[in-house]
Length: 226
Image 1 (tube, rainbow, N blue to C red):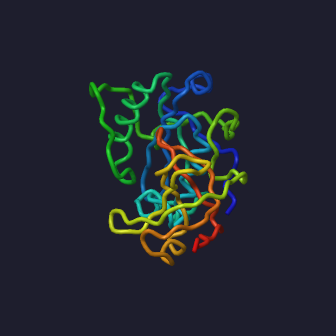
Image 2 (image 1 turned 90 degrees about the vertical axis):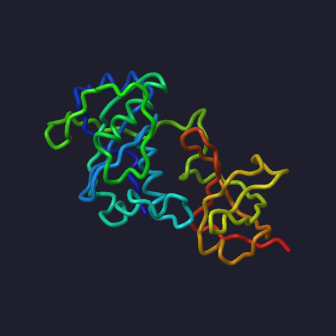
């Protein structure tokens, strides 16, 4: 699956290219025939890559949500990408994201974020605006955690466990990564094992919304430890 390393975003609600480059946090919207999804990130291109990866990874805990279903149904090339707000401080960014979800994201966002103050940020319907186009590239990984596309993975021992009605996989102590990190991997691979089984798997570290987790290669098998 080929996910672009650069994406055209439309700047709306009076946002300029200078605003995007001078603010750390970006509130974005992805539009398709199924509706609009709103989110918050510091790297819009990397975040889109992660969304698409989740949509086609049955091991992802986001696989069955409305947004990833829309990506599979419509195809990643059928989306229009927008930047609807920017912020330099995390608290302000989260408030703007919550307000944007309330305004735009009624169809594909599965949960609402909590907004403090109920402020009007001047959001307008996307289809009523002529945005300025801006091509964004994925930011450098320098100083960042490994991404899903990082080929530099490490082999660790992990444990099959049961949670919320399904088998999951997590790291154990004494490894290259901390114990207890959930591991995204193939659902069909996990199904081969019983709760409590130990397996070998190649993983890379990733992070979303400040929470660290591990990602297995899409073709990486789980090797039993006997």
